[in-house]
Length: 452
Image (cartoon, rainbow, N blue to C red; front, side):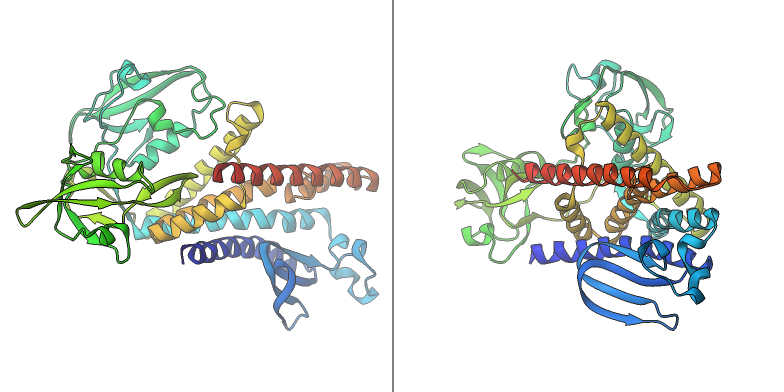
């Protein structure tokens, strides 16, 4: 069932992104007077097809990993003389540039829409209040201590741990100073802390910026009182019930769900644990064998039991939303920031500051799509926005076979007053295909490595 859900979420995400991208090309092409022969979502055998009044064939194909818009073009076959004025290659270079650029631009517009929806719907998140700070760490040397709330990183407001993490990612691989503003409780005056970075996480395969600074998030003392028990799970099979209070695991006393019970279960997939519980004033011992599941490429244990409901302190919870008008510039600014971050990450990857092993392929995308869809509409919309930005940036790279490569050719034609020679274009096409295939294979290799 989980696999089916993940596949469905992936198909929806990729299908939406590809449709929007190709529709950008399609919409501008029609307004530039170009005849569109086919609009295909996916590759391979057609699952269904239909035609509109202008003769365009619309196709939904079996392999949902891309798509294309096929336009009337003399370079791809003979064109009836009566339709020559509708051929793509007969249009002036400015119109061809507009048609090619429309796909990536559509992806950026989709990202703005997704961020706008998240901003209007609103999210509830936890304030970035520090838990224990690792002694001797970068954060500890800067003077950060447990209980402080991070309100700014390098001048950017941080209202959640997600905001903090994004700001830290910007500094991966760098040497220099990071400025953090933090407060000691609601209404307190912000204090500045200077963190010194030295080739920070340079080349790390799977960097964890928050932990690398020695920071943890504050968590409440949650008593290990069981709430919902999943049917057919390990907890139910062992006889655990809702309302049981866990008092020990393998003879060690426990009194905190998050810091003691969860880590013990996750670290014991397939290994029996002796669980001491208190039920109706009576102490009992039960043996529970956690089942195994994969999370972020690692195998961990779970028993199918949740903790009883508890409340976070009011000052720890943030409700973030915007009215529809204010949300427009917010969404546009966030799309710009994420675009810059994506380009900066690519640059650092090329220069070795960030490990190329962080490059992800379709397997990782599928896993993230499934996880974000399960987490709720806000997470899935954010995922759509990030992936759409990545697709837009990727397609604008000046690599032949990508939209960016075509833009380079057409810009050169605009400047020179004539197109580049077919020999140069063919040479660029071969290089572009080699690069794209190589990057795709490397990304898939990274995916498979994470599975291992």
